[in-house]
Amino acid sequence: MYPTLEEKEQVIQALKGPQFDRERHGSLFDRGSADSYYSRYAQPHWYPQGSYQGEPITDLTQAEIDEYLAGYEWNELHGDKKSWD
Image 1 (spheres, rainbow, N blue to C red):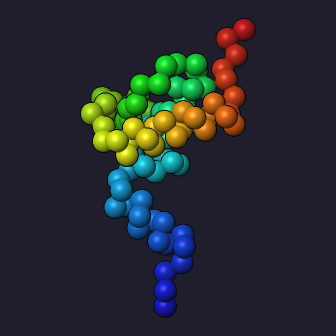
Image 2: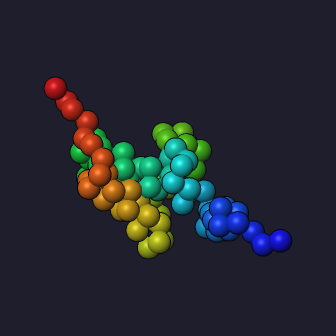
């Protein structure tokens, strides 16, 4: 029996690390999209224990920076912005 596409993706995510899990609060993609939503400057980071839990990780590889920027750009193109009114 061969693994399904979903099972393969789960293995890839596990090998990459939790910072690449786009469904996880505090992940690179999550933080990038949140920074865009709140109209903050892009400052690549992530939280291993969840958003604002513990210290943010800022010493990132290029792949991690790219993942953060993907979240930021996704929200710039498809998301919305916080209304401060």
